[in-house]
Image 1 (cartoon, one colour):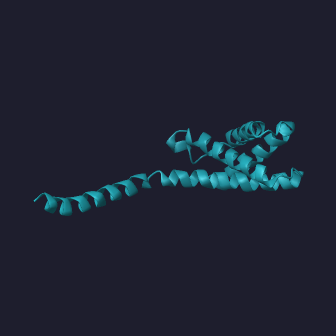
Image 2 (cartoon, rainbow, N blue to C red):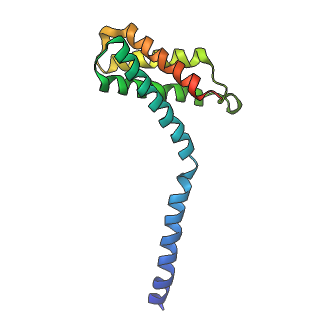
Image 3 (cartoon, rainbow, N blue to C red):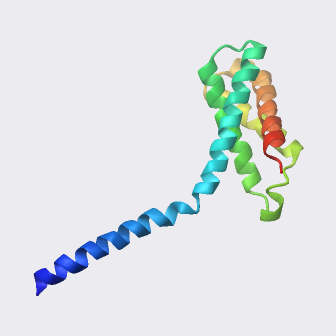
Length: 133
């Protein structure tokens, strides 16, 4: 009897637990997509502004832009639900400038603080323009 229960109950239990594990995180995936979208916009924008301004290192520019984009997304995520889709340009530019400056300091790029702030402001502005509905 014990073997019969194991053979019938165990596969059903495993299937139910696997289905529960795979279906539970389906809701937060939409939020992750928005963070990845903004991080991607930030990385591309910062690589372009770095190339235009002659700041060379593409990888550092992409990393700083990605972090800045995620910070701008996070700042907008803190707003009340009905205001999340109506972003504030000043907030996006300010958060972008601050996040890029801080990331530049953390990565050891202390000589270009003003330039990092300008790059971050451009990232915040680009995210605002491209994602404001």
